[in-house]
Image 1 (spheres, helix red, strand yellow):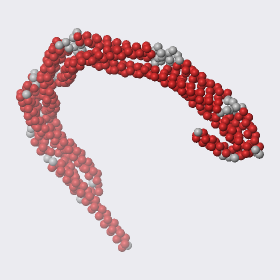
Image 2 (cartoon, helix red, strand yellow):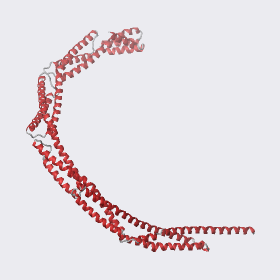
Image 3 (cartoon, one colour):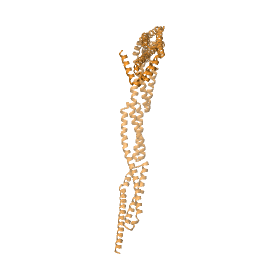
Image 4 (cartoon, helix red, strand yellow):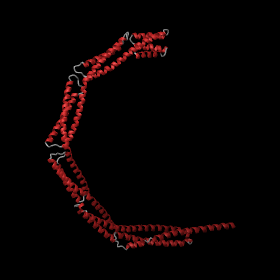
Length: 566
């Protein structure tokens, strides 16, 4: 029984402890709400609104202020008072038996505090915006006033740099100053919203005017100090040069100069109207056109002396080229009596002659143009330089043709020497064969020998023609050279095969008791008698290698050693 009583007491103590803990927790939360409510009150937003309300606000600014003032005094202030009262009621309730039912009212109070905090923050931000706008506009008043002083000073002290454009620039400045006065008036009246709209336009206008004040002198300077003098100089120079009988690559330069002068006048007028983008492009076009006209005239001044000199040089050059071509044609005529010309030498020389005639014709025309004071010197210079290079190329080709045909006689003499050499060589080969004392020669060898002999006779016939065709002679020389080498190889093979066969036949007598060697020797002799010396050698060599390996190689090495020592 005592134990049960102790358990009951412990439970009661735990419950009481839980209630105390919960009560403290609720009171802490209510204290936090109270602190937050006091913080909102301490911001003294009402006093700030009262101070701003003392200004003579008008227009949209007055409407915005009234809305903020009503929002604060009619909604936020009552809400703050209601939150304070509710907080006190809940503190009292937390100390009574109502503690256990306080959670829902506490959550409602916390939500109301959050809502009021957000509303007051919105009012505060809007108020700060109005105040910041007002301060910015006050600063703008001073800045713009100072800037207008600078604009006036610049237009007055440097009016020479703006020319007639200063009239319109001053008009723009006057318009901006009118807007500025309106802006100042609205600012004084406290209508910040309307003043802000004017300030935005005013600032854009100021930047535009500042840009114009910076740009106009740059555009005006060449229109007054550069282009007029340059155009006058061009007009004077053109008149002087035409009197000195200069002509140019472009027609009617005087009209081009007049057109540029008219464009200069129009561009100056456009600058007065402040069409700056148009003037900037026009200035670039004028500068480029003026430079171009200078270049056109200077080109003829620079070209005259060199062109006249070139005409003098080309007089001798054309005569020399024509003389060389005539001599080349005469040489071709002479050589064509004895040789066939196969490389279109006559056609090439005639083509060169036509090219020279064209160059001479251009030379005569240019020379006459200079005499008649009708020359465009730069064109004459360029044309004669091209013709000079053409004559250099022509003389080079003339030299190549001349060198080619000049070799004909030398080549003929060399060909005759080679013919003599080949004739001696084939007779030598014939004596070599006769000295072998063979029973006979195969028909294949004889056919090849007489074929080479016929080729040598054909070469002799080519060289005996009334008009020698050196191309055919050269081909025949190459053919005879190759076939003679092959004939010499065949002759050497014939000699070697016959001599080695005889030596192997003698060596085979040592194997008279070997039936295979005896039969091979008989077969070899039959082939030898049929003039098949290579076959005869192979037959006896194969049999000996079988009975005595290495014997054929030993005899062959000994034979070639003797040949080399001879």
